[in-house]
Image 1 (tube, rainbow, N blue to C red):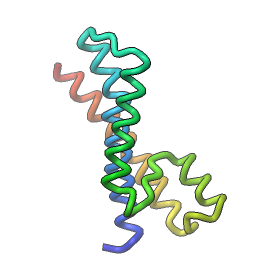
Image 2: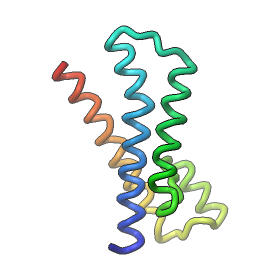
Image 3: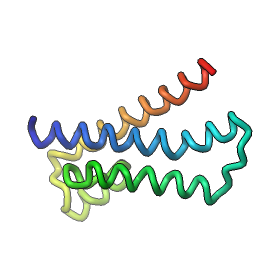
Image 4: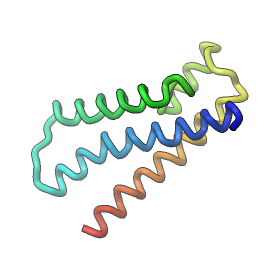
Length: 108
């Protein structure tokens, strides 16, 4: 697998982990009637990002956010030919993660 393909897959899975772990915690908490609170949401996002960073940080740097990718490109820490793979993986993954959350709630 090429370097660009590994970056794409790593960002795809890493961003999905963040979407399912962060907003998913809030959505399921509200759906089930739990009061998660600010601390619970913060921990959910932080632990999701930590898991993604440990899993994929060595492959892509685990940007997980197009703003981070653009900042890393502007600082010349990311090659410009890899930027589309990062951003495309992040956007597709965010949509897939949102669809997964939506489909779980529709079946419940």
